Image (cartoon, rainbow, N blue to C red):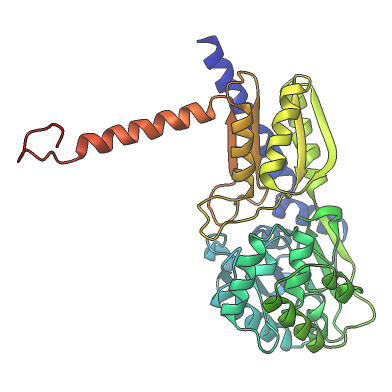
Length: 392
């Protein structure tokens, strides 16, 4: 009974800790805090793109209010409140682009074409790679979708995937700079990439990558994709010599620090790991499980982004659930180890879940549920009474 009480308490605390991290990097909070100390003069236009687009736009609205003369907010399906966005919001698919992603691209170019000289405030967060697109000539939606499906299961990291996406886009990799004219530009970003590299966040719309061709040449791609990427790069317009400063208003380190502070408030010893988790999700899950089993008591906090190699017909889930399940296998039978793997943007892969919380009893509970379902299924099977039971 006491062990059950402790298990419930530990699991509850493990959910509280990442919640503190999410509050710290919430888009409305970090954008409004930054704008309060970096006020702009006069009216402007606003563009927000990414899974945190609405939250970031709300932060800007809190500070700038009616000074925002016109806005365009592009985010993932289910991430917009149209009472707030009115007619300025567009929803598109993530992580694989759809027709709405192309419509969002056309709307973005139309929004920028109305050049009235007002400054632009861009708010960028993770997910922009899929949510808005203007493909290069020769690339259609079917090819874009196939490419992104392949990328997601290729084992490439986010930096490499975004470089490939840039080769197929007119607006990514700084391509959007050619559509801005001479207007003043301010750009704030929530970083979801290692090192907070501006040229990687959302396959960045506003920051060119000087050695993109060299970097792409080092990535092993199938022939069908390699040819299109190189052809796309050849179409890219000459970019401006200078790109705007992209101000990072929230990142992984800020989230990790907030999580550590909450764990300390709950009176746990805390180990804050500096290394960025990367590589195969299952292998990482096994490694973390081993470190938990061999490590000192307390809370260990890691951050990063792993990769997966998908089979031809993958099941449900995302990289965080994949990592957690691998860890659950290694932790099976342990009574004192718990692992939570969660995405800070609230969704893990093509699911509505953020991740998974596992412990030493996860597999046994799962097996019990499977057996119970099988038992109910067997009880519901019709019985054939037309012949006697027995060996035939």
